[in-house]
Length: 346
Ligand code: TYM
Image (cartoon, rainbow, N blue to C red; front, side, top):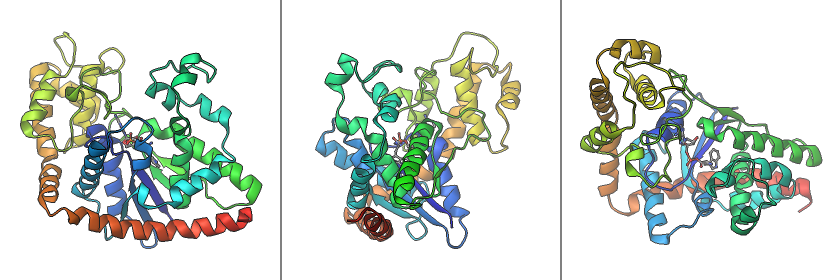
C-alpha cells in the first residue's frame, strides 16, 4: 500500500519553486492514485516556529498556504489536507524519536546553519552557533521525520533541497526499528526534475541561490498568485548576463539558464532546455523573457483565479475543510501511536 506524505511551511504564499519542485507533483500523484493508496498533505505550522514569527502574520500565512493547496487542485475528498498543529501526534512522536535521534547526525545537517547564516562546515562548538541556535531549529529534522513516520508514509514527494531530511528520516526510522522492532517503513523521497535537468528553481535576483520564501526581495520569486503584470515585471528584472546569444549553460550562465529551465518545466510541447535554447538562440534575451513571462502567466491563470475565489468565500470555508482533514489525519496517526506506545511499554 502506497502512503504519500508531504508538507509545506506556511512562511508566505507558495512560489514557483515550491510548485515545480513539489506541489505540482502532489496533484499529479493524487490524480493518478490507485485504489488503496492514501495521500496526506500538511501545512507544517509547527515547523514555521523554528524562526521568529509574528502571530497575526503567521495566522494569515497558514490560511493563504492552505488556500493555495486547494487552488492548485488538491481535492479534500481524495487527499487529506491539514494543519500540522491540529494533529498532536506529530509533536508527540517527535519527542519519542528524539530519544533515538543522533546529535552528531543533526549537527552535520545544513539547514540550521543556513538559517543562521553560518558556513556549511560550522560545528556546534562554534561560539556564534552556540549563542544563536535554538533547540527547535536544531531538531527541526526530527519533527519532519515524525511527520512522515507518524503516517507510516512510504513515499515523500519533495524538492531536491529536502533530500537530506528524508535521508535523516530513514536513518532515524531504522534506529528506532533496530531497538523496538520493525514499526516504520523506510520512506522513499520522490524528487522530480523532468523535463528540466535542473532540480531547483533558482532566485530571479541571484540565480545561484534557490528561489526561497524567506528572501527579503519580492522580485526574487514568482508567487503562484502573482498577477500577469507582476510576473512580467519580475521576469523582466530577472538577473541575466550581457552575452548577445541565448544558450543553456547552468554553470557559466545561471540566470539565462534558470529562465530556460522554468520554460522547459511549463512548455506545452515539453521541449528540453537544449532544444529551447536552440530555438531562442538568436532571438535575444528580451524576446526570451517576454515569452517566459507570457507562458508563465497563462500557465498560472487557473491557480490564480481559483485562489481568489477561495479567499473571498466566508471565513469558515477553509476551517471546515481543515477540520475534516485533521480528523482523518488524527485517526491515521493514532494507529501508529498505539503500536509505538505498546512497543515502548507506555
Ligand atoms: P518548504 O516549505 O521550504 O518547501 C515546500 C516544498 O517546495 C520545495 N522547494 C523547491 N523545489 C524546487 N526549487 C525551489 N527553489 C524550491 N523551494 C522549495 C521543497 O523541496 C519542498 O518539497 N522541511 C520542509 C517541510 C516539511 C516536510 C515535512 C516535507 C516538513 N515536514 C515532511 C516533506 C515531508 C520545507 O521546509 O519545505
